[in-house]
Length: 279
Image (cartoon, rainbow, N blue to C red):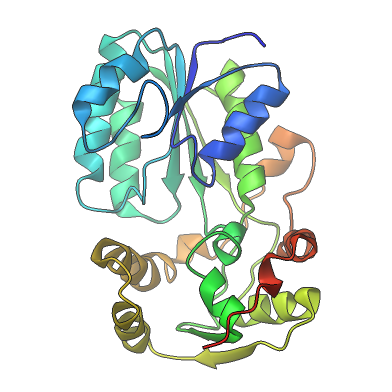
């Protein structure tokens, strides 16, 4: 494998892990930016950043848990400044569609003087198999607010393939790319699709956002995660810009974006939705 001096920050996360895989498939061994990597990268400890960025030319940046959270903007300011000082030439930033705070972070990167591409994503399909929506699927009792809001759920494999492509191809420099799935779909639709593909009876309950927040607190979900989910439901989910399908994936990858049904069929085969939990 050739080393292209590429860094993937968040390289063990939902998109970063897949970006690293995409690069390896192209014969490139990227440096992984994560707490368990060597050198270690920790967003909360800036003294880890210099060693991770040393000798890097291009970087993919995914901020955990989201660019909307308090402190994210300051972290992106510091990282962008340091990266430029250390000679990084190009940055691909994973951003969130319809998030004002994320757009402030985009501007920092765009004004940095480095080459850049912004990849704006909608809600991830994999939230249903690798994240906070998995638990209710396993219990068979899914209670969510705003069950009729239309969302262009996008597959993280598509995001990663786009990110790896624009990282290596400088013809996308200076662009904002919006990645969505090929259709608008509701939570209710999703639970029906998962029910059919996993051959399980799932019960869906439409609740208020307030009830959902109370439920998360009772489950002792960390306060910052509760804050983020409340923000995403109350500000991002209902943003008109988020209820649009954008076809930026197809011209870059030469194929259509993966539909939720395709994702669900593949995921059902893995058996992840059949590890049923009984309360």
